Structure formats: structure tokens, C-alpha cells
Image (tube, rainbow, N blue to C red):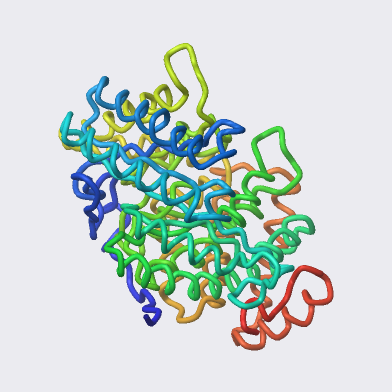
Length: 467
């Protein structure tokens, strides 16, 4: 399947985007309709340590405890829709037939049972693990010891064959270069690792995933740059953290938008993954539904745009919570309640025609809290999207996206609306200088980077990306 580049924006203007409504809604599972007029809660979870010891224990954990608890809490509190997301643990990806298949089949069965019993709309997203290691080889035939590239494709096949409603992944292409970029503050390496190498890898693997998903009538959802831009964002942290300047993490997020978009350009239809904070940019470009996370994912991590990320979401997620008891019930039940009530607020705003008011309240509450939230505010996300679709290759797209974000941040700082620390200002100045000096020729940029980073990064092997 060929890659089909987006060349124009899905929306005529930023103000046309709201939560719960996408230009291209998607239906699947037992009555789930995403982007069709209301937001849907997506609960994410992890099994307790030790439950992965046997397939039987793991299946019981996911089906009889986690899934049942979450669905029953949704019914108890009167939420009409629920999407479960199972992010496969290592054992499921390493032996997908033995550990993965029974979990998928069990969750499919309980969703059907609960849908028929209570009338609640249900679906399960299965996010398979990308266990590939750059040092061992990223493509089939390269890893002669653990066969991780083959296992990724096998996991996708078995997940879809066993009944997954949505197929997703958190691919790791380009991570070895991005990790170096974060440690050294090298924005050129970040552009190369995320925007170029990551995109190349995404184009290959998502063409394969789409074929597999369509063969089994599973919805190919999308990916995220959790392994890249999220690393930069988490390292940048909050106001007490200074290891990575937030201007650096903000610009790397725009590279991630180019990378994550490749799944949809390869034929995936959404929804994309919740931990892809670049989602507002993607929705502006493609009009496909986006899953997002923010304040209701404090169980997993903190960020500086917890309200803002709800601004145009179609699914609202908690990121992930380990299954364990809380005072109010199990962890998944409690966090599902938190998600459900937030989604209920959004859906009430849609019913009362107040969705743009609530959207803007979400957005403005975090717009100036930090550089990353600022560039992800839906109007700025739209501008970055425009810069992306104006170019025709991933390198120029990433470069244009990064420069657009950096200039938006610089303008906001200059007019006094966005505050920056000295280190953030210095990094922003360096980013503008470096990105502006890069060549317009994609091949020249790649040749230069291959030569430089092959010498500086031991884990970087150009053959992983057919270079």
C-alpha cells in the first residue's frame, strides 16, 4: 500500500475543531462510534506484578478483574460508552500465541456479554509492544537471536485474528538517535531521529500493520511517539525540573507530529494513541479522531497541559494504572469514574451547544503554562499543521514544523504572553539558528546525519532504515 501524503488541512480554520466530532468518524466493536458527536472514555491499565507468570493468570487478570471491574463501574455510574485499551506486556509480545491470544479472545467475549446484558457500547484497543532493539536490527531477518521484528508483526497478526477492535502500537524507530539528542540538547539529532528515521520506520511498519488489520477486519488505529517526544517532555518535566529545556521538548513534539502522521498516511484510520500529545496537530491535518490524555492521567505521570489536551479529543484516557485496590474500589474502577465524569462534562457541553466555550476554557487554562502546551493549543497546532502539509517529504515537514513552533514561542515571549527561563531562551535561540541553517535538500541532510551520528551513536545502524 502506497503512502498518501496529506497536502491540505481537513478544517477550513482552527475554530472548526472541537472535542467529540471528527471529519472522519470511525465505528467498531459493540456500538462504539468515535468522533461522531460525543467523547468516549478510554481506560488504560496494567496487570499486577506476577500475574504474567502464566497465560491463565494473565488472562484472568485482564478479563475477570480489570475488564469486568471497569465495565461494571461504567454501568454503575451511567456512562453509555467505554473503550478498553490493553497495552501488551512483554510476555504477550514475546509469545503472542500463548499469552496474547487468550487475553484478546477473553476481552472480546466479556465485551459482547456486557453489551448484550446492559446495553453499554464497548470496544477494546490492543496496543502491541515494539520490542525491537536498534543494536540487534529493526527489520525482519536482522535480529538472528530474539527475532523481535518478526514478533512485532506476529503480535499484530494474532491480535487482529483473535478479535481486537482497534490495532495500535508504540513504535521505537529513531529512538536511539533521539535519546542521544535529549542527552546532548542536539536539535538536529532530534529532527533526524524523530522526523526522518522515525518516519521512515513508521512508513514501513504501518503499511504492514494496515494489511494485517484489513485482512481481519480490525480497525488500524494509529501510533504515537511515546519513545521519542514523550521522553523529551518527561525529562523537561514541570517547574522544578531543569534537565531539559521545555523549548527543546516543545519543538521535538512537532517532529513527532510528522512521524505519527505517517501511520494515517499509510492507511490507518484512527483513533490514534492517547499518549501522542501531538494529536491536535494530526486532527487538524487529517480530520481523523484522536485519543488524548491529560489531567486524568496523573496516575501515570504529570504534565503542564492537563486541561488543554482535552480541547479537541475524541477519546479521553487515563494513560495507565496498575490494577490494585483503592478505597473506592479497584484502581481501574476509580480512574474510570474520573474519566467518565470528565467525558460527561464534554458531552453535556456538546448537547447544550457550549462545546466551543468549554474547549476554550480547557485551552486557555494551560495555554501559557509552558512552551509545549502553548504550541499544542488548537490554533497554534493548526498553524504547525499548515507548515507540515506545505512540504512534500518528511525532512522538510519536520524542519518546517519545528521552525514554525520555535517562531510562535519566540513571538509569544517577545510580546510578554509566554514566560521563559534563561536556559529555555538560550535553547530557543539555538534551535532557531540550527534549523534555519539546515539545507533544503533531504538527501544532503540525511547523508550528513548518517556520517555524523554513525560515529557518535554506537547503537545507530543506518541499515535499520535501509540507508
